[in-house]
Length: 289
Image (cartoon, rainbow, N blue to C red; front, side, top):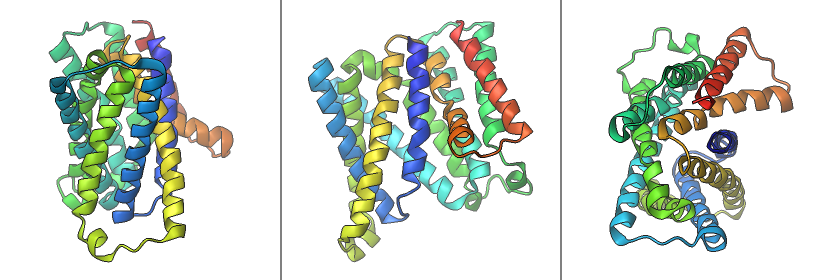
């Protein structure tokens, strides 16, 4: 069941970039993050009231807020990477973050290592890289130059991998929906502080009904799929191994491409077909553990 929840998480998160891409850049993007975090808090507390009603204590609350902060830092670096870099260069690096999670889970939590798990991790992450990489963009790119976005992508890769490592602790210590509420409450606080400290917002922002409606609509859609993705991932982690679940849940790009092929009739090239085959074999290998 955990494998199925992880796949549902990947499927749900696959829709999130579609809605996030509809929001405008600059401080309005920060505004949309505030709205999204607020809605996720609301969804989480409603789900907690209906399904869970687990409790927690202050030390656990503060620890989960710390995990939330690490995740928000990764989000800031991710936005910067996509702002200044080429998607074909930075996306493969960011989407391979489950490698960090898998390694840390094995080291910190003594998760078992099997040949099938190693092969599965390599195939899913390798397939993700092949599926998203654009060799033309990578050619002649200076790796350590900030303007390429690559340093920001590596920082995202590291921070998000660390944050996801401890999501298993979140479900164990606070339950799925209470844990999700605390994480999103942290995101709401951090994004609000980030927004209010932005000079462009504090000096120039004017309330625009039409613009705000667009932001609210797409932030709502993004929050909806984010809630499903995060909820399914936490449910998966409550009954599965962190390394295994995180790698499967990170196969978002597989569903992005399949969605484009099935519903948008986009053509796939040989590289993409090969990547899909590798990723499916990797997921199957991890499912057999």
